[in-house]
Image (cartoon, rainbow, N blue to C red; front, side):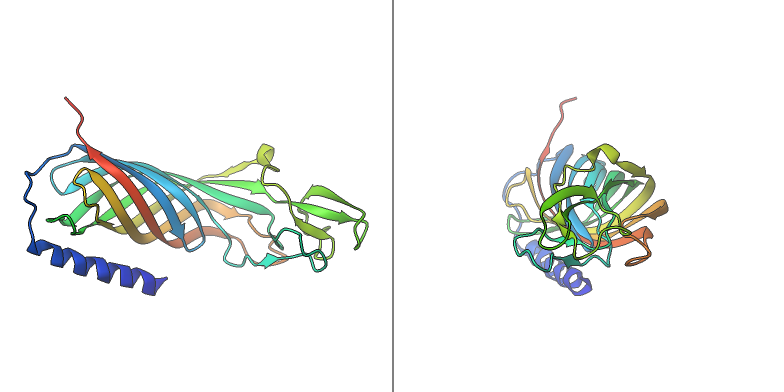
Length: 251
């Protein structure tokens, strides 16, 4: 992941320097606002995001936004039933799924403006805010009485009762929605931003950066006595792929 971020930064910085050789022919348009959203890939999962921005001068944008991501434990490993080939994969020892909502506030500073259609605008973004961790219990399909199973039952995973030979596979993701629990905390993110849309009023590009989520206590993703220690802090690398638009608000 370090090498990937370094490579992306190098390529886009080089592109932005080359872009200064040919200027736009069209009149300069000053926009007041922008909005964008897209896909987020990070070192422990994936998610999506939306961001709204207000220009504070030519090179600074104040940002409001929200991220929604899932967060995996670093020790998660997919497992399969040893006999039934059509069974669904599951993570042995995982007791809860973790999803994080991040309402955010911050700013983007433009370092190098895009001076031609094929150029790249380069900037950096700093945001932070609440990190709302939401856990949902893991449910599995359990075979009874023993292999070969006579029937399957959907049960909440219990590491003291359920083992490799009686777990058929994971159950529907709709199970556990009535037993969600909140783990509050906070987060901060820093990223380099590369915007390369061919249209002045459109946004298209990517961000590469790091994020730190800090919660008030450890979040029980895994059964600690079975697999690994749980975490209170989550440090991740991420890539955001985004599209959006710039616009003006009258008055």
